[in-house]
Length: 158
Image (cartoon, rainbow, N blue to C red; front, side):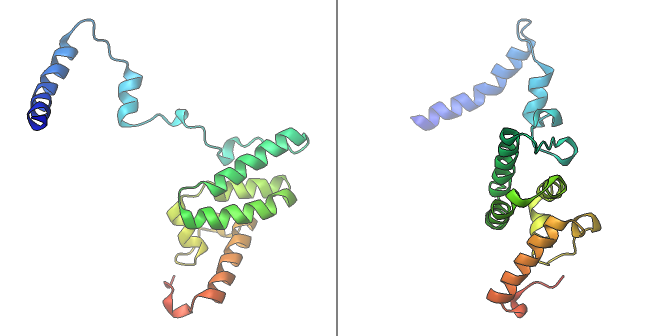
């Protein structure tokens, strides 16, 4: 019986949608119809390096910035990077100056698959990332851990 109801609903849905579009009282919002297929770039509120407001003079602003960066480094959605970056940032963020914070934000802006390949040495990082002091420190830590815990024969060659 449930199958019949589902098939009836499935068959009547296109007719309902086309009737709703022809109805004069049915108004479509171009923003909402556009956002169903692709969100606007301005609707995202990520912390990008171009709009970072680094205010280390006020303790409250400093605490908020540090918490935001620790959260970004621990909640990337890529478990390995969450663990590596999250622990590194948590241990080093309090000793960073404004330039170090900018370098950290630049690293955090990188895409997860690319950053993982660069940190593990599977691919060569671009010059802008390779010269970044935060990337260099995290990269050295990852390579030291790889040398300690994995044989070189089991790793991908760059």
